[in-house]
Each structure stands twice: as C-alpha cells, then as structure tokens.
Image 1 (cartoon, rainbow, N blue to C red):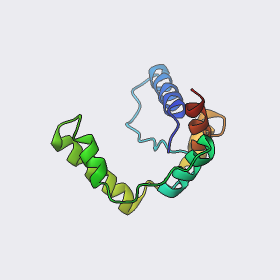
Image 2 (image 1 turned 60 degrees about the vertical axis):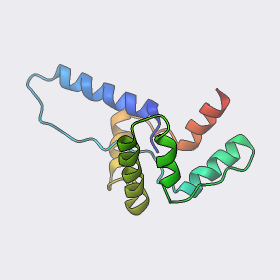
Image 3 (image 1 turned 45 degrees about the horizontal axis):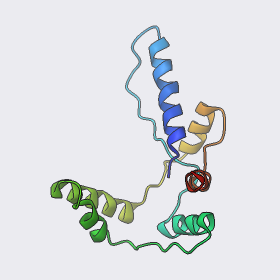
Image 4 (image 1 turned 120 degrees about the horizontal axis):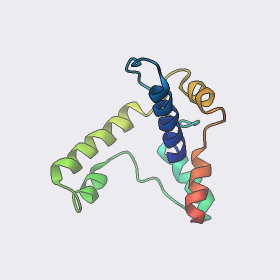
Length: 124
C-alpha cells in the first residue's frame, strides 16, 4: 500500500529532475511502493485498530468486488478490475529488492506507512 503523498512527491522529484536535465534522459521505471508488504488481514487489523471497531477482511474471492464495481462502471471495466484483483491475490504486490531503499534515498526520508495514512484518513 502506497501513501498518495509519497506517489506525488516521487513524481514531482522525477519531473523536476527530467526538466532540469541538459539532454533527454532515458525512460526509467520507478516502482513506487510502501514501506510494508501487507496482507488483506493485516490491512483489516490496521483499520480495526484505527477505528476502534472490528473490520473483517472480505476474503480472496473478488466476485463481490466485481459486482459492486459493475453498479457504477461498465461491466467490462468491472471485469478487468476483477482480473487485476485476482492477480494481486495470486501473486501479491511484492516490491522488488531495494525498492524501499531506493525511494527512501530519493525522498530523503522514510516512506509513509499505511497505518499512518489510515489514521490520517480516519481523522478527516
């Protein structure tokens, strides 16, 4: 899980670096990741703690997710979202080695945790 503030700051730093470059820089992929690799159960536990009430992980079957998405977007888009969710369940969203260290060095500070983001959202 990635905090939107980290995404924005990484993008701004990279755009400024490219704008200031003397010549065109090669295309580069930056894996934007959070500091922790979390499971569905771990995310539910964070929200339970932050909200002070039980939050239950809905499980790994994304059919309910697809049905919900289909109520306000085209069915084909909801289906594609389901396929993406199935891939997350089967393969996870595991950062590559050194992704966290690379982003921490780029930002010059630790990445924001999901718990911190959840607490900030709950307080809003």
